[in-house]
Length: 213
Image (cartoon, rainbow, N blue to C red; front, top):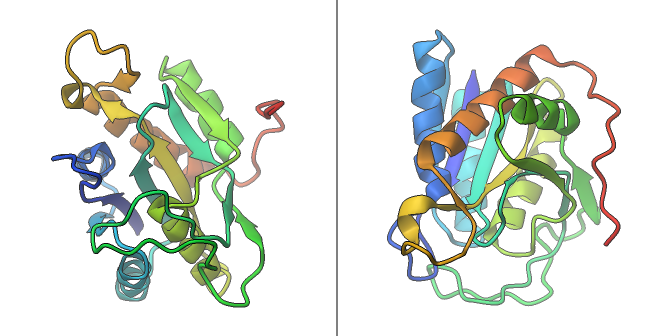
């Protein structure tokens, strides 16, 4: 079973493309015969992680791909690492604004994704979907959920998971704004590619996709 998650809108937005993409990708994968559930998470520290934990216990997925919006990024970002730090530049949807707080008290400094991000990058590039391996998921609710997911999966050795950031959706921006965005359909296709790649890849590719800064 596969679990896809996205977030509710935040920061004054009326839509969140991560949820649009997760929901559409789930439908696409279901049409291919896969057992997939999609879950919308609140953009709230703590509550989002708790809801994800409940979903892990209820569905017992073999694969979890969480998605979030990274407005301003031009590509699908395959996140490599989650850090044990909540540091909110803006309040979440419940008004919480933690600063330099751990996601999990006493947890390790970081967790690496267990998704084959290099293989997924190659698969996305082959389909002309702009993508990158990202070295930071930020310190907002996206990273919070990513870290909480990997912390939970340490006790579920048969389950792999990770996080994908998506850009703005085209419809969120006025014409000619110059801010990077992607069509909703392409973002959904990208998440589906990540899932398909993870299902058939046991060892990730050794492919240069690092960063100099």
